[in-house]
Amino acid sequence: MDAIFDTLSRTVEQLIARADGPLHFRLVVMPTVVTILAIRAHVRDVKEGNPIFFGAFVTSPTERRRLFRSGLKDFGRVFIIACVLDTTYQILALKAFHPVQMLIVAVVCAIVPYFLVRGPILRLAHWFRLRVSGSAGTSTAAANPDSESPVKEESADE
Image 1 (cartoon, rainbow, N blue to C red):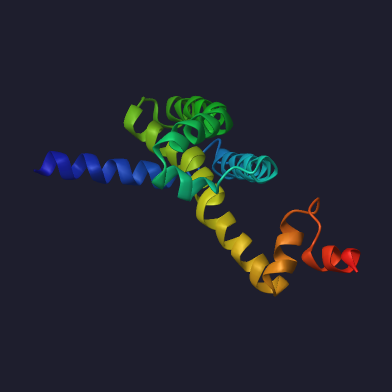
Image 2: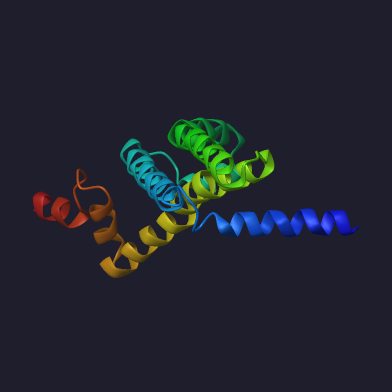
C-alpha cells in the first residue's frame, strides 16, 4: 500500500512541478492553439449547417464518427506535439520517462481544452448572443447573415 501511495505522490509532485520547469511555455501555448482550432472548427460547422458539436457527439452515433474524425484532425497534431514536448521535458528535468504522466499532460493540454471550447463554452456563447439580441427573428438573422429576416419579406410583399 505504501508503494502505491509513494508512486501516486511522486506522480502528483512531478505533474505540479511541470508548471515551473523547463518547457513550461507548452502548458500555455498548446491549450491556446487547441482553443483557436476549436473555434475555427465551430465556425466551420456553423457555416456548413452541422449540429452543435457536444450535443451531436453525445446523442447521435452517426454524427459521433464524423465529429470524432473532425476533432482528431484538429487536435491530433497538437496531441502528438504535446507528447513529444512532455517526453523532452521528462528526459531533461526528470532524467526518466513516465508514459502515464506524458499521456496525462497531453490529454490535459490538447483534448480537454478542445472539448471544453468546442462544446459547452461555444454553446454558452451562442446562447448568450441569442439572449442579448432579443427576439428570435433578430437572432436568426444575426446567426445567418445570408438569410433575409421575416420583416424584410413582409415589407417586400406589400
